[in-house]
Image 1 (cartoon, rainbow, N blue to C red):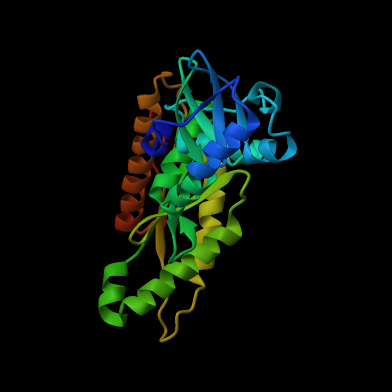
Image 2 (cartoon, rainbow, N blue to C red):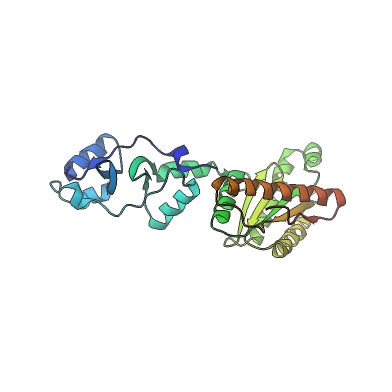
Length: 283
């Protein structure tokens, strides 16, 4: 789980309340900065941005030109929390505050680079790190979630017999089906790794079963040519019990849910049942 402290810039350049706007402008130009946190006795009281500099007279003091209150985050916030804040408030930089003191800053450019690491270019979906952040946040907010894990049957043999180009085509087509079925308000998709896909959903296990059946039916109709068909096994797990509020439990609960769904998909594959439930063991 990536936290803000893992990617923030630290130490951070700041400016005092009594400095002039022209001083702030010179400082920002010298260090190629788009904004400066404003501090008083080391505590964050505002931020002066390049826009604030443009619309205020150079002789004004920073205290009169700065933007306040400041949207900020904790170093222990997840990077997903930080992205949500920046999107909600349409800001390009986010001071990181601990005990009222500025200890770092993150920028939109940094977040774009970071979120690109959560993306799988082959299937044009997110990767496993993304799904852990989503599940972590949903559990932290008190939501009950289900996990659907889909595993392509005999994918290794497909690669050996038909080559990786066909294997990649298979994964792309499956990802396309998944994106056509899920609802972005309730369902969150990733390519978990290799030939596995994971959907974290706010739906209960019965609703997750409906989604899984639709996905498997549509995948079975994919035609890759050469009479090559695709079958997928699915496992479903559901989180029902309230967990402790310690952050480590959210991450561990996510790991358990995905692992239980993985074990369920293996049972589905072994027993040729297509979909297998593994419900009730997460607490």
